[in-house]
Length: 266
Image (tube, rainbow, N blue to C red; front, top):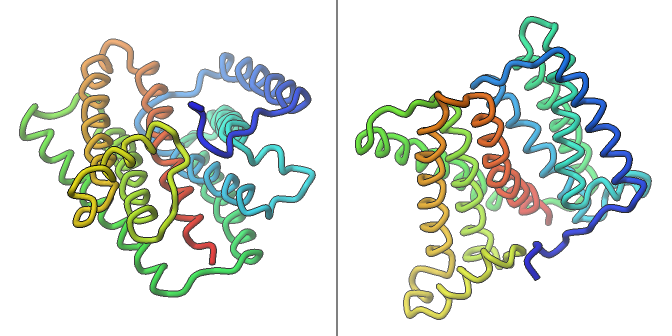
């Protein structure tokens, strides 16, 4: 099986609803042409987290039955992406579209997360401290990698905040997976990632280094390579490149945020 455990293909009704919504937003976006710049990339971050939080609510069986189907993967991330695009399109006429889009995303994320926290048993302060430390390590590693890349290859063509979102999202996924698997006893749901964990578990280093170090190294190597490749093409096709980088960032930040929120469940 190539798809992650827990993947649930949406029903016909939901597929049609998402398709119509995507088409409507696409038509509106073509008319107003929202600016796809570095600020827009940053504005997508809370929406990536929103998708993760809604999916955690689905995993923990706390979503209301009427909307439960939207919480499964991949429907949840498609629905959130459509909503984010719709808000950005409407906000284009505000004069500060990135700010408005980010604010709406933050408000929605805070509302859903706050609602979920009141409906599940929660962990103690020690676990919360561990998760805060995980975020701090991911942020520090992101800064370190970006500084190292600048020293080795020179300044990036893409804006620093774009590189930070992409690298930081994947390092958060790597760090949270390491904590979850090696320290908290969780299992990896993605088959390809699980293969890396199994390979590391078969090595004599497993008892001292755990089983996630290989996964972390591969993550770092991949995200550095991706940033380098896309950085070379951003000047020629800035809009398309930034849109692809948003997608790449979401593939890391979404699972990373999902892990951290799920670990709060007692």
